[in-house]
Image (cartoon, rainbow, N blue to C red):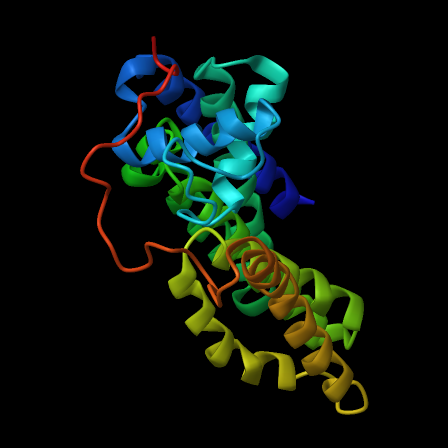
Length: 247
């Protein structure tokens, strides 16, 4: 009970700090060149044009964050503040996930310390107020680890599938995350002996599901094998599109 109370306090502190950061950052300062590109795709999606940018490229960016922005555009228009507040909530929830994850391995005291450090870490607080991929990516990563640890402990394939789906969504934010899959396989194998094969296969299927759907989509739309994006490994575009957010 005391540990749960600590987790609630950590969540409240984390959310408060992130809301303060969101309110302190003017909308125009929350938008970056990459944001404009993601949001350009989101605008086209909400307008019914499909997943395409201003230049007509249909796979220039990975889809998770543009979908995230498109959902906010559909609900709130081009306002920046709702995105910032959603990211504040995700950042605070991530602290709870950290608490749950560390508690499974090192106990409640270590969990409280880890979650408190996550709650007040300046970089995590600051990035939650900016329209960039880091907050959503970090949330999905910790969620993946927590679900996979739970699947390994209980031998439940359903949790392993959920962990894989979270990891797949993270890979479609940052493709380098796909490399983590190889290092997480031993954790999946650590499951209850009678269920370890099921957990391993479930985690693999969940991890590959969303990237596979995206790759097939690209094959159909582009008539080419594009597993991630058409600009993988490139820096920001020389002339990012204009963006109505922040004005």
